[in-house]
Length: 459
Ligand code: UD1
Ligand code: CA
Image (tube, rainbow, N blue to C red; front, side):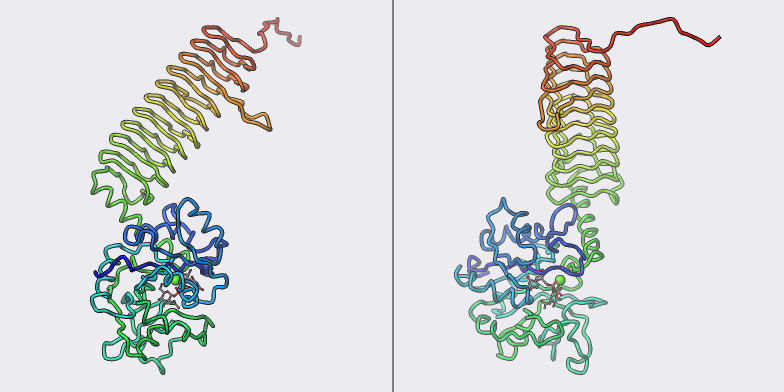
């Protein structure tokens, strides 16, 4: 491809997405836990790097916030007057950046395959077309723009609403996928020719085709067959259709990489998840965000996790819920464990049923096997936390820390009122309410003393 460096990309993402019936901007609707726009960026970033502009409007602030950590060029389309208007609004930024061709992508087409994109751009550039766009041939052209051809040559794109057999001939099955490559110099003079005299009262980017044809410019519709990855998403049904295609693709890729996935049809793996060959998953389960499951680790069924790491040889048992957690080598968590952000299990430690951890470290080989809450707590090595132990970390205003040092033993049903430290090798009697630090190697008992009295009976 010639002078790739002057090809830029423009993502149209300002629309409201009325058909989603949601307050969220459509491009923030999620597939497998990631916003639609994330996928578009993932496809474009390696090709265009810094040369990507995104038109936002509806819910612009929430889109900026969602991508705040990334250095992206956003262009504001304050009023959303149509895809053609979005292009007009962004055009000057492209010219200022010295872009000679621009790939325009609808932001609601998240599964866009990168290889397809490259092939498309090559074809349009090789044919030196002024306007190129991808087309699909569908049994049901639904609400997509119809591609009208005369003697095989593209004549126009006519939106579904505006299509009229009397004017445009027999309704075609070829539709516009919403992905265009435009030559900036020749398309520039067409932009202010766009009109909104159509059923929607909007300025359509698709009208560029007819305008270009009328000026005998080179226009090419690149036939992409029936590729379902190129279908735009406008409503919940279309979203789950694309999500389910994506889910299948990702699971098959991981299987091919050597990850053991039982009941693969019930497993959902987000696009940023990393799985090492030799990891084992049992469906149904869901892994999202930047979760990682390493070699030899096992994730049992009905587990949900996000942004969590499961190290080599660790096991997450059924019905556990992990978010922002780190499970070290050879640990066991669950069944029914809840590991919240900042939960860290060090090598060989164990967390059993109905145990919740938040911002807490459980040291090597330590155990909290039943009904426990550890919040803002640091647990040393070889500690045993008895059933029903609760760290009382919140006084209604502030959070306080609990420290349980190496080798300590906490008896069942203990309340540890933070801030408090239980020293090395100490033992806390069952049922204690510990409000003061326990020195090393001591026995702390803090509960009412038992009295045995004669039982009184009637008669
Ligand atoms: C559009 C095409 C249609 C094509 C289909 C493919 C037009 C007029 N029609 O229809 O030919 O078959 O995509 O999926 O372009 N947007 C803005 N600003 C606006 C309006 C929309 O940025 O003022 C953005 C939207 O956020 C969306 C994209 O442009 O990401 C496409 O808009 P949408 O309303 O979904 O167009 P379709 O009706 O699907
Ligand atoms: Ca659309």
